[in-house]
Image (cartoon, rainbow, N blue to C red; front, top):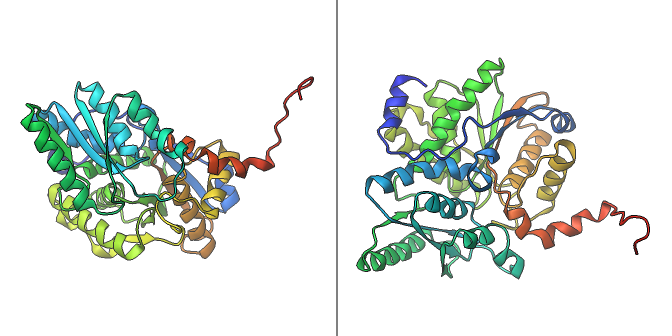
Length: 355
């Protein structure tokens, strides 16, 4: 990493949890099916509690928490959030009590959604769960968490709050500036140059981090963000704000150009955390062409967006494409009742002598 960038990032305290570098793997069968050369950055393999992009992101908030001698960690997100699952595990590793506020972002969910997947792991790590009935009001969710932190402080605890609204400095995005450099180093060792990068865009920490990291390192490849939570216009505004803050944080404001921010919401409907037919196709293709698992909320829709970009010509046939696999695999089990019916085409031989 160039010394200027390294020095800027090293100013921020950090707890190292990620198993890095994560693999950069070819996906030749799936790529051939799509008519591209496909490579996958396997950030589902970041190590801590089934991996995912949140492991890279949480290293910096936890570094700040330790610098403040915090003993209690607070975080808010959706019921099946990957971030809170990682926070629960990381808190235990660091000896911190963890409070998780679960927001009702997905309507009409069943008991499996509320008890399996990430929620099961949250409980296994002994996190204290709190409910927040509003589905999509980040400032209100952060404010509720601040009130909880205040009450814990009055009890003698030393709380640290991981805020998610973009009003707060996006220190978690620093993890993906580092990931951008890591990926470029791997690509250069393989003599690869990519024509396009595709990643999920939700909180914007991964999208902004990859984009700013690449630009800071002099790489101008297009980065296509696939919307998993909000419409493209709203998401472009969010990524732009986070990326601008991030570029200033690493002392490279020239690394942000609003014209570089791209978001696609054509595979988002019916909304966050809701399955659709194109995500089903993407999940099945990845599993059956590469033995690769994608989750229903993030990477399934992101692969669906990649497929649509290829089919529409946004990404030309024959392109060398990098897919950022951000993990989220525990959520597969919370969606079992919805995924199971898709598998009716797979016969189950119960064996000789059984009924």
